[in-house]
Length: 349
Image 1 (cartoon, one colour):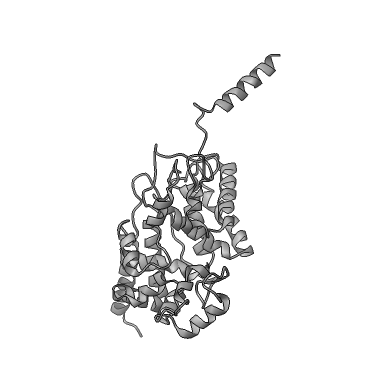
Image 2: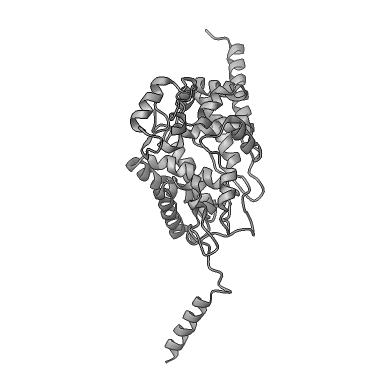
């Protein structure tokens, strides 16, 4: 029988661990809040969750697409939904940059559908940036991952990033750990954040061309031979345009098996496998492979930190009427002025 003292010490230990985890959660940056839409759109998160439950049940692959969309937005000039903007006469959009060519087209449509549903219910008070952040969180939850609160209050950016800025800020699949750590450190994210956020690769698919440099002309010695041979079945040439699962164990479940893959030398990208090869991050990979709860805790911390990178708040940015284009400036919208004048004359005569 456990003594009263022992029970008290056990309760104290559990409670202390809980408070340590809670204390690690990053506070919202200035302008964001845990309850930003509590008055203006209290049903916001339920609208998004309910819709995504159906979307992801119909096609689980959309979860990885929405999660990746949030990553590609935040790492390039901050979480301002600039990746959603279409190109203009001023130049091509972020979507045409090489790292973004494989973003799922359906993901953009889902975000715009969510935006319409939210705006129909609440009016134009919720930004596309916040909708994208919530959709990423729900994609994690609906595939078995951790639930967490998302700081809200972002505004949408007015401009998309250049192709060079996109290339300079996103981590390429062939990048080694030095590059991964360097790019994330520049954004205030540490090695634990880097390894935890890489765990997003536990769901989703990849095109062969993102990793066939590890198969042809010579096999990467850090890759398990059986794994490599199986990949060659799906990707018989260096230019194959087929796709494979990112996590060979549980491809549609958000769990810690991605790290088990790495320990078995079955990571798909160089940027994945090198996290286990490199001594600076190997211990973190091992700890996540052994303890899914630890991975979930660190992933949540990393996501909240990433989701607050260079956000626009208050009077900066805007809340887009449509996620793929800037709002019209009514002061200089000549077409609208002409249309209004024509309607006035029609009414008079």
